[in-house]
Image 1 (tube, rainbow, N blue to C red):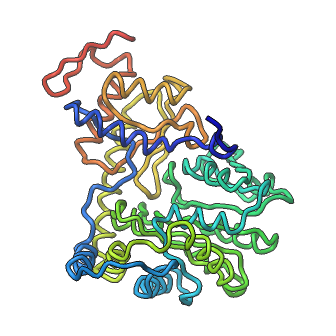
Image 2 (image 1 turned 60 degrees about the vertical axis):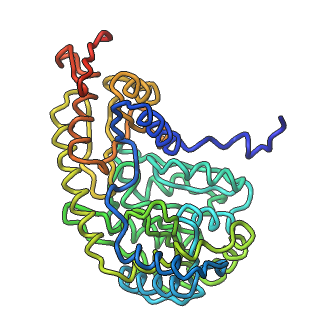
Image 3 (image 1 turned 90 degrees about the vertical axis):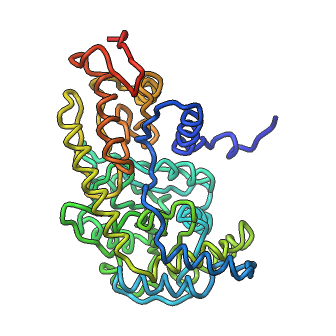
Amino acid sequence: MSLSIIGRSIAESVTLRLNETASILRAKGEPVIHLGIGEPKSKAPLDALIAAAGVLSSGDVRYTPADGIPALKQAIIRYTGDMYGRIVTPENVIASSGAKQAIMVAMQAILNPQDEVIFPAPYWVSYPEMVKLCGAVPVPVLPEDGSFYPTMQDIERHTTSYTKLIIINSPNNPTGVMYSREFIGQIVEFCESRGIYLMMDDIYHRLIFNGKKLISCLDFLKGSLEDSKLIIINGVSKQYAMTGFRIGWAVANKKLIKAMVNIQGHQTSGPSVVLQKAAVGAINGIQSCVDSLSMTLENNTKVMMDELNSFEGIRAIRPDGTFYCFVDFSHYNTDSTKLAYFLLDKVRVITVPGIEFGLDGYLRLSTCGSIKDITQGIERIKWALDPNSPNELYIGERKLVRDWL
């Protein structure tokens, strides 16, 4: 079979594959603990469900404008004013089928073959593949000091005449770290001075802990949004636990948004009106659900860190937000893919290999599950790896005997 260069070069999404694996094993009755999933367990907000039900009960489910229905765009405008302190116009907004599509359409609108796209590492698994889908070149930047916090010197060292776009995801998936206000200001100023597009992937920006405060990148613009190359990405999937609703958006200058709308119009047309109405309900509704989710995740993160800190041979940095811990297991195995499959095979715990995020020897662990999932999941991992653990472990009524250490 003859495939295109792009078709041959794009890898599958490891996170989606792991979700499928978990579903298959659970259907077989296996006692799987999924510490890899990036999906909150809480229910979608009632305001969202009522809004969606209203559309369904009317039976009036039709095509929508390629850039989103007016009600959703107005909700996004209000959200941008509340969270970023600046009012934009409907022409500055596009609603898409998930934040992922908003990112993809933005890249297609600005990237040419051989353009370079910089993003700090570790990075979200889809960034490199999305860049390659545009024929451009991904340029991951691992901080030189060995931390998860990039500096402007790290970014500048990788900037060339081919650099067209820089992507900043803060709080970061997979590390959970939140970049400083100083760094965000520096990167905005740097991109403005160089004429480089800057994409702020803010999908986790309200799920922050440890007393951290939301940072608005728009605070650092010297001029208007219309004169900038700043792109803000967000959506309802994470903060409202509405992953299956697939509604995201982008805010940028009118010319770029117009190009994105043209592309999206030929790709998928507008998102489902039912799901857009649900997003309107969530954004305009009672926001206590976001605070509740953030508090739950912060507590879950504390529990996970306490469990990990009792585990000799590993290193974990306390996250500032999101629902992930990115943990160094290289003491046990520097090949994170082999380690992840080993844990799945031996103790039925699903994790995500660090190599998928650009750093081998690490595993991404999710705090989305219950406290029971977290404590039992780490207990199983510790039993499988730590030679000082007892030789036997019960999973339900099944007794496991360790014969590999």
